[in-house]
Image 1 (spheres, rainbow, N blue to C red):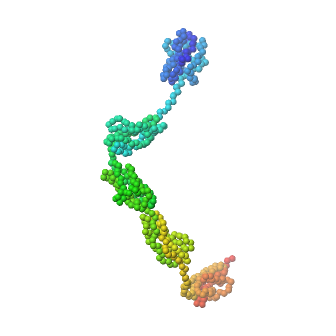
Image 2 (spheres, rainbow, N blue to C red; image 1 turned 30 degrees about the vertical axis):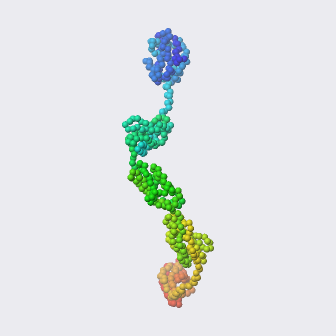
Image 3 (tube, rainbow, N blue to C red; image 1 turned 30 degrees about the horizontal axis):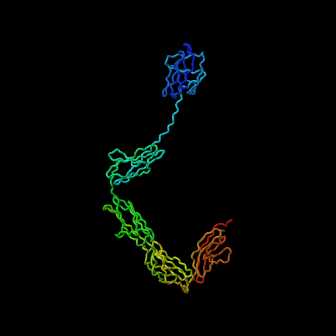
Length: 540
């Protein structure tokens, strides 16, 4: 088949047939190219009608004048090459003949599926999304300009694409010209570029583009052209903070110091010590465009001193002083001697060492050793004076003493040892008791707390109290109405530490009266009295 299918032959119907032609398809989406089928236009024996031609791609079919009822259900789409339909029965009325060249509406046969009201829409083709090129580089700036070159810096673009960056291309153009030339033929990934071989006084326009597999970014440009000229900069030494003070090293250590400086054009650098050039046999100097290095392999005490660094450009200069101090441990103290020994104590004296190791003496360490053990023990550390007193020595022992000096490097390698020894002797002591004068403790009786008047209830026991002192201890006598109370079970008399008490058990009306406490010793007597009143009825 060739994409066109002839409609099945139908017998012509009489002209008086009343049946109308089948409804035309509604206006809808354009069918795929080649999917619609054209019917042959020539009718058989002048009675066959022409069928409507398939609409072109992208156009809708024309509507027929005759109204057509909508199909009840959506029918499947017409295949691209439908099978031939069987001829219609003879009793079916033939379609109304139409004029030549007119479009005819196809009539579906009975029992066959009706054609779809709307042809299927074409399936959209999935196109791969285009990868966008990277965005332009950021923060393009001039870092440095010299008499024949300049240096650019920039930052990576915000968007680099899926494939990533291949690199950057730097292009330059002289002011007044439109001829852009690439500085680098191949892209590079560095965000810093130096453009060389330029003439002094030129004005150069610059742009930088980012390159990736998906394309080239928009260029990043400078607002103003770069003027190629030498920028003068006064010389300046940037002395590190730790070198602004005295730089201390030990004998034998290496001295390696780097001091940066700045200035344009390239400054001249010179070192000196005491106004004289340096000894190149001991001191190595290496100078670059931005710093100078001072190096001594093994420092000696003779390397100590102040070194002057000078950086100058065409009459302008800057100076700095480097103070180096090479130190070593000090020598031992001198003239150590025992000054005095008494009791448990020893006094020592000495003089400072002859060699302080090219550093200040921080102090002295004093040690002792007894003859029995022979071991040295530290008594004093960092003693700042040249004399000391050592105490708490043990009686009967013999002691030796030595002293070390100390500076920033530590203790001296050897110590000064006292020539003599200190023997702590046992001293004979006699005890004499102190004569204490005997005090006369004799004292007549004296009441310190008198008796007090009391009122009590009949049948309830009561107590009378008073206090007395005296030596020898006085005898206590109790009286009632001036009558001595002897051994009567109704009364109980006690004395404890000078406190006298009298208990009256279940007093009655006849127990009331004046009670007297009398104290008597060989030196005299004393008495106190009180009144006791008994009230109320007997308790049941």
